Amino acid sequence: MRTFDKAQKYAYLNELSTPELENILRADMALSGEGDIDMVLSIMEVIEQREDGKSPENVADTGRAKEEFYRIYHTPEGADKPLYATENQDKPILLDGAKNSKTITILADSAHTSTTFSRGFRHAWRVGLIAAITAGVMLGAMVVAQATGVDVFGAMARWTDEVFSLGAIRTEGAKDMPYDSDRLPMSDTKADTTNVSYTSIQNVLDAYDITEIAEPTWMPEGYVLSDIIVDCFSDETFRFLSAEYINGDALLIIEIERYEEEPSGQVEKTETPVEMFVVNDITVYILENISNNIAVWATEHYVYYIAGNLEKAELQQIAISAIKKAV
Amino acid sequence: MNICKKATRGTALFLAFLMILSTTALAVNSRASDTFIRYSASLSLKDDGDLEIYFNVATSRHMDIIGASTINIQRYNGTRWVTEETLTVNDCPEIQTSNASRHSASITYTPDYTGATYQAVVTVYAKDSSGSSTSQTTTAQVRT
Image (cartoon, rainbow over all chains, first blue to last red; front, side):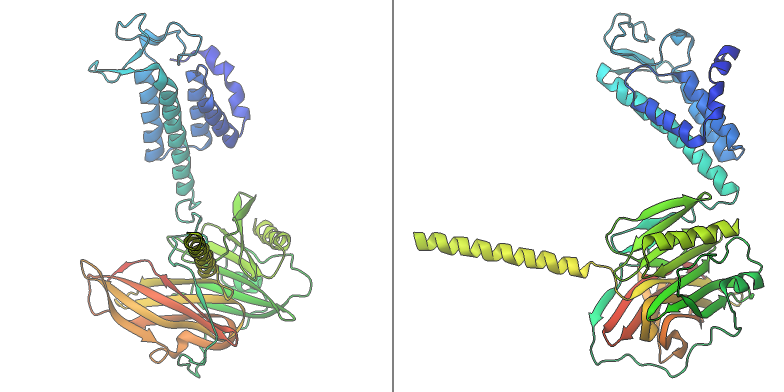
C-alpha cells in the first residue's frame, strides 16, 4: 500500500488540470529513465476522483489497470527497487532467481509462468503498459462524459479530403457537372416546409423552448435575414432550422439540426486542413469549401452550421457569439 | 541509332505528359463541390410501420432547382442491398423546389416487408445556369 508520505508527495497533482495530468503520463511514457509507479497511480486516482468515475465501465477499466500494476510490479520481490531498469542500473528486477542475468524476468501470472524479455524490450514494454493505462483512463473519462450527457461517441468529427461530418461519413462527395440542356423533371409544386413566420433564429428557439443553443449576437455588417425554414418531427418537436441572410448577392446560411444517435449532416470541403478551436468546452471546426467557409460544432442534441463567403475570423466571431450566448 | 534514341525519349516525354494530365484530371475530380454546402438524410420508422425519409440540402448560391433527384429505398435481402423502390420528383413533387438555396422534405414510404432492414440512398441535386451538381448520401439503417 502507498504510504501517507507518498500521498503527500503527490498532493500537488490535485492542483493540475486533467489535460496536464494526461500530458505527464504521456511525458513519462516517453522518458527512457526509471518510472514512478506511485506518481502514475496518483494521477489515475486524481483523474478518477475528478471525473467522479462511478460507471461500471470506468471502475472496471481502472481496476484492471491497477490490478495489472500490482500483479506485475508492486510485488514483494520488487519492493524498494526502481520500477524500470535504466541505462545505469546494473541490478534489474530479478524475480525468478535469475540473478546477475542480463535479462529481466517478470512473473506473468499467478501460476508462476515466466516470460523473459531482452533488455531491448524494456522500453517498449514500459511504453506499452503506460499507453494502455493512459488509454484506460481516457476511455473511462469518455464513458463518464457520455454518462453525464456530453455525447462524445455520438458527435465525433470525421473527415475525408472532400467531406466532413460529426457522425459517420455517408457520401463520397459531390460531382459538379457543366450545364447541359437536359433538365430533370421539375414539379410546379413548392414544398410547404414553413407554415409559421419567424423573424429571427432566437424566435424559433424560444418557440420550441430550446436553450442549449442560441442565435449569434454578432453578425458581419450588411447581412439581413431573408427567410427561415423550420422542420418538425411528427410529434411537432423541433427538427431542423435553416436561416438565410443576404448581403447583395452574398449568402450567409445558418442551420441547426437536432440529432438522436449521431449527426447525419455531410459538409462539403476542400483538402485544406480542418481548423478547430474550443469555446466553453465546445470544439468548433472551421472548414474551407471552394466558394465559402463553414463553421460546425455540436452540442448534446444539436449540430450548428454557419456557412458563407466570409473570412474564417468572421466565422469564428459569429460562432463564439452564439456559443457564449447559450451559456 | 540516334533516331531510335530520340524516338524513345519522345515516347517517354509523351507518357510523362500523359501522366501529368491524368493526375490533373484526378485532382479536378476529387475537388469539393462549388455548389453544395451541406446535406443530410435520415430514415426513421413511424408508429404505423411506415418509413419516413427526411433530407435537407443547402447550396452556396440560389439555384434554379434544388432538392433530391432520386430516393432509392433499399432492403437488405441477407446478402446484398436491393432497391425496393425508386422515388423521383414525378412521384414526390415535394422533393424539389426552385429559386432557392436550401430545401428540405419528408417522404413517407410503406415498406413491402416487416422485420427487414432498410436504408435510403438520397441523391441531392442542384442546378443553375452554370451546371448541375449531385451527391449521394446513405441514411442509417432501420429495421421494420
